[in-house]
Structures are given as C-alpha cells and as structure tokens.
Amino acid sequence: MEVINFAEQNSVINHYMAELRDKSYQRNRLLFRNNIIRIGELMAYELSKTLTYKAKTVTTPLGTIDIPQIKDDLLLATVLRAGLPFHEGFLNVFDHAENGFVSAYRMYTNREHTEVGVHTEYMASPSAKGKTLVIVDPMLATGGSMAASIEALQKTGKPKKIHIACVIATPEGLEVIREALPDDSHIWCAAIDPGMNAQKYIVPGFGDCGDLCYGEKL
Image (cartoon, rainbow, N blue to C red; front, side, top):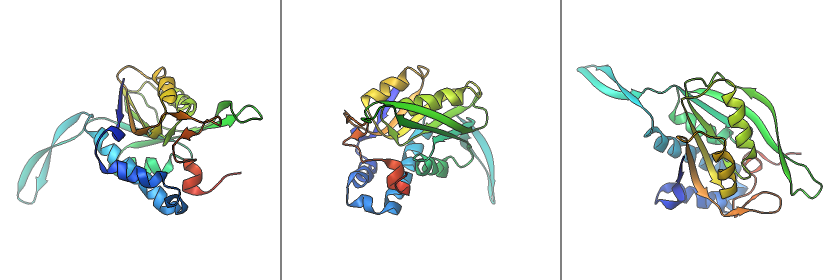
C-alpha cells in the first residue's frame, strides 16, 4: 500500500493547509470550505495520473485527433457531513463519477470522552463491483469511521481498486485502515500529523472539520 503525503512536497496545497490551520482564518466558514474544496481538486488531479486511459477519437471543426480518456469506472464516496466540501472538490475534477454517501460517525463511549466507537446508520451508493473506489474524508484520526465506510461500501461489490483521500491523517489512523485495504491501495494525505489528544482530536490538526465548515452541532 502506498501513502502519498503532500506535506513532503512543495506545492500550493501547503499554502492552503496553513490557512486552514490558522485560528483567525477559521472564523470565515466560506473561506474554510473553499480551501477544503481546492485541496480536493488538486488531490484529484494528482490521483488522476494513476488511473488507466484509453485513446478516444475526437472530431474538431478541422479534423480528428486521438486523446487519452479515463477508462476506469469511478465511484466517488464520502463520509457525511464533514466530507461534503472535500467530495465537491473531487467531483469538480471527476465530474462523470458515480457517487456514494456513508453516514459513519464516532461516538464517545465513556463519560471522560477518551474512548471512541463508530456508528454507521445510513448509506446511499451504487455497486462498487469492478470500479475504482475513491473514498474521501478530511480527517483520518482513529481510522474507525473510514474502516467502517470501507467495509460498508465493499458489501455492495468488490472494487477493482481503492483510493483513500484525506486532508489530515495520523499514524494510528493509517495503521487501522491499512488492515482494511488491499495491498495495491493508495492513501492520499495533504498532511500526516503526529497524533491525537485524549479526546481523539488530531494534534496540531485544525479542529472539527464539520463544525468549521457548517457550524457546531448539538
């Protein structure tokens, strides 16, 4: 399994990440969501280089030309609700992809809010059988929500290949989903942070992505 960490490269993704992490920048939800979208678009472009292509003849006003086109059947899935702007960025690039949505969220299982479980209650998706499955979720902390999403989506059919995309991951989360993925899978990260605090939030991270995008929840 290959892990691509864009924080190790010089790219504009690092500029967007600096803004996302900035407490003063986070006061503007529109700007925050837009940067999540832009990171999704850039990551989708990089991911597109790994797909398979087949030449297609295109007729212009003055002749014809063969241009490589994506051959893979793509299924683009996300985890509600925090994944929506990230998914939008990917969909702006892979605009012909089919789409899947999973409601998988973490729940604290003790009074101190230091132990976390995962609850999956809703999924709407076409079959993943034979398709290139791309699952996007901005925060890969414990890895529980992503592992549950991988399991749920694979029940619809065995995909040809799986890509996981996140904005920030932790080493612990990566290890959890590594066990849930085939060996030829790819994990795309804008950054990999060193760990989590007692409440299982990524540190230094940037906080709760869903709340920062859409407002606090009850």
